[in-house]
Amino acid sequence: MKNLLVTGGAGFIGSNFVRYMLDRYDDINIVVYDKLTYAGNLDNLEPVAPNPRYKFVKGDIAHRESVANALSANEIDTVVNFAADTHVDRSILDPGVFIQTDVVGVYTLLDESKNHGVDRFLQVSTDEVYGSIDEGFFREGDPLEPNSPYAAAKAGGELMVRAYHVTYGMNTVVTRGSNTFGPYQYPEKLLPLFITNAIDDEPLPLYGDGMQVRDWLYVLDHCSGIDLVLRRGEPGGVYNLGGENERHNIDVIKAMLSILGKPETLLRPVEDRLGHDRRYALANDRLYALGWEHSHSFEKALEITVDWYVKNEWWWRKIKSGEFRAYYEQQYGHRLKE
Ligand code: NAD
Ligand code: DAU
Image (cartoon, rainbow, N blue to C red; front, side, top):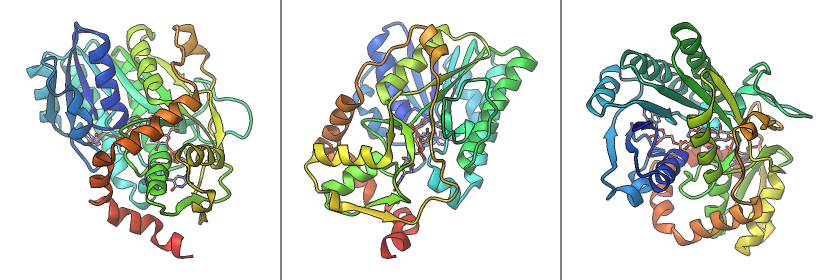
């Protein structure tokens, strides 16, 4: 592993991963390949911009020629694919773009990686491919029953990765991460949306009864899990990567408000998300067998995250005043009026 292509590296987890890897290893070069959609942001990569082992290339994973150029021009031996459309609510409003990137894009990136003899291909997938579980924990062999257009598209991409391993012998691995939080997360997702709304004393639109359960994973733990699977995962292997921090949404938000010193009266129950999954939960035994451990408790990681948004208004205020306003109106305008 010498020359890594990190696709989607200008997004939330991808940019954290690039910083993590450059800090940790001094013998790898990283090329970030990213389309810079609304969620991609070069501000996220500002801390690594001066590093001579880092380079940025703008491109779409579904564009064959650009992918081929990025692979050959940089002698890429390892691909880590974060690139995706990632927000469940947006996939409900407009599923087509999700199929284009999360299925067609993954296929194109895989196919060109095969043509260029890439040694290792890691697909960053999600616990949402399993669907919802009321009790117990999902294991890697369980059936995939995705419920949202986002989850279905991610499952499609992931199954194509499996097919390239079985059919062509490609050296692939897949991680299925749970709900991730931390610095640089686009403020459409629950925690950054609610933290930044609360800073401005705006209402917090809680879907349904707020009793849905998510398994919260700090972004640096997600990065260390991906690094471990990249290095030690068995070819063709799939690895759950869960935070083992199950919380009801309402409790996560109350904890956040208490750190911020803001009142719970900001909470506004609104019309639920369509097809809303009730609970996600993963068994992580396969990952632990590789030697994984968490670096932060949930409480500590939440404090670090809240503090980061408080101190980095320059980062999120410009996002929230741009394209985001139209999306917010479409997603929440009617909900907040009701
Ligand atoms: P994000 O939305 O913050 O970033 C996605 C990045 O992909 C952006 O930089 C965007 O510009 C880029 N991108 C989108 N379409 C592209 C295309 N066609 N070609 C090239 N680049 C493109 O996402 P995130 O939350 O950092 O998630 C990263 C990956 O991790 C995704 O694959 C997601 O499915 C997966 N994941 C996320 C979570 C989570 O809780 N955030 C949990 C598990 C898995
Ligand atoms: O589980 C992994 C997945 O986690 C990733 O694959 C996705 O890319 C990522 O977006 C995330 O999906 P969720 O749908 O779980 O995350 P989101 O932040 O959108 O919502 C978390 C929970 O909070 C969910 O139960 C819906 C609820 N919610 C969310 C928003 C944005 C609200 O109640 N109100 C909101 O405004």
